[in-house]
Amino acid sequence: MVDCIAIIVAAGRGHRFGGELPKQYVDLDGVPVIRQTLTAFIEHASVDAVLPVIHEDDAALFAAAADGLAILEPVFGGASRQESVSNGLEALAEISPKLVLVHDAARPFVQTALVDRVIAALGEHDGAIPALSVSDTVKRVDADGAIVETVDRSALMRVQTPQGFRFDALLAAHRATVGEALTDDAAVAECAGLDVIVVDGDAANIKITTLDDLAPAGRGAAAALETRTGSGFDVHRFGPARPLMLCGVAVPHDRGLDGHSDADVGLHAITDAVLGAIGAGDIGDHFPPSDARWKGAASDVFLTHAASLVADDGGRIVNIDVTLICEAPRIGPHKQAMRERIGDILGIGAARVSVKGTTTEKLGFTGRGEGIAAQAMATVEMPRDW
Image (cartoon, rainbow, N blue to C red):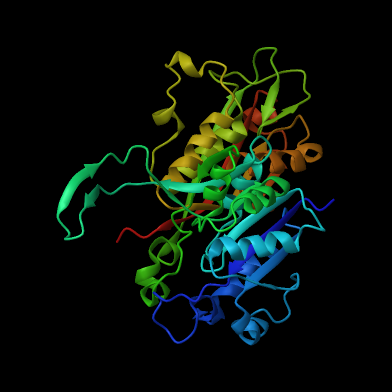
C-alpha cells in the first residue's frame, strides 16, 4: 500500500495576479513557481508520489515547467478548487494511498519540517492543516467601508497548505459535498464531520497572489531571510545511578549524569546553540534550575521550546552539529539513533543533523572519566529585521 501522495493543485487562472501567465508558471529566481513546488514534495522522504492537477489549457505550459520531474500523469481540474481536488482524489482512488496531502502550486516555499508536522498529526487525526495566529487587529466593516466592530482575534487563524488527510476519509467527504463550492479541504472535512487538527504553520510559506509577491520585498520572510549561527557548550559530571541520556537517547552505561533535569548534556548544548542563533539567551534563562518544575525533566522539552521560538519568528532550523566529548561510553554505536531523535524533536529530519563523538586522549576531567562535555552549532534562517 502506498503511504502518502501529494496532490498539487494548479488548475486556477490567477485573475488577481495580473501577469500574462497563470502565476504558477511564472519564473521565480529563474525557475517556474510550479516546478519549485513539485520539487519540494518529490524530494520529501515521506511522500511516495506527486500528482499535479492542472487546467486543460495549460498542458503545454505544464509540460515545459515540469520537464524531467518524476511525477504522476497530471489530471485536469474543474471549475472550482473543490472540483479540482475531487478530480485528483478520484484519479488516485485505484491506488488508494493511506494519506493524501493537498497543496497549492502557488506556495513554492514550503519546507520539509512543515510537511513533517502535518504527516505526523495524521497518526491520530483524520486531518491536519497548518495555520498561523492572527497578529493584526481585525475589523468588520460594512459595504461602505465603515467599521462595524473589532473582531476578537484570539480564536482566529490563517490557514495554509499542505492540508493532510487520511485518503479514504477525504475522498468520501468530497463525494458527499459535491457542488458546495467550499474554499479548502478542511472545510470539506468539516462538513463531513471529520476530526481535523491545526499544526504550526510557517510564516515563510506564503501563497503567491500578485506580481509583488515575486519581488524579494513582497515575499517577506520567504525571501528576506538571513543565515545565523549559534554555539552551545555544556558539561555534566557523572553522578547518581540513573539512565544516561545523550541527545535524547538512553545509552547503556554504569553511571548517569548529575543535573537538575535529566542532565542530557547533548540536548542542553544544542538548545543553547539554537537560542544563541536567535539572540534568545541560554537554557538557564528559560528553564532556571531553581525552578522545581524542571527537576528530572526530559531535555527534549527545552529543545522543543527553543525550536518554537525560531518558528514563531518566521525562521527555520537548517542544520545541527553536536560533538560529545568523553572516554566512555562509546558514541559511535548510538550516533544514528541520536541523529534521528534530534531530527524528530526539531522537525528537520536526521539528514540535517550531525552527531560526533571524540575523546581528549585521557586529558582533563573527561579524560579522567569524571563527566561528559558537549559542544554544538546551530544554523538557522531568520527574517531580516534591518
